[in-house]
Length: 90
Image (cartoon, rainbow, N blue to C red; front, side, top):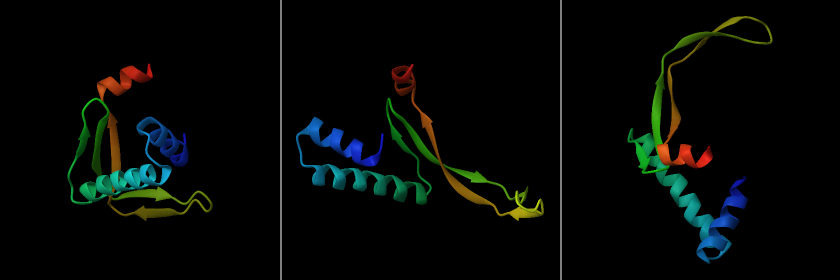
């Protein structure tokens, strides 16, 4: 499912315009991103939890040349599905 397909489903399910559904979805995604940037977790009971994972600096290899490179430490978004969501997918 693409973002536009999700917007269509939200619009038809809530009987609002596609523009309003798109704006609502963009606002939700933006709010989740801002909360994660501050270091907070975002939990939707029954759906799952968004959090930030810290990655240590490590060594890697350039696949083209085989040369060893240093990969700096960083942060990455992480999602853990909730039990109800996992059960719905089974």
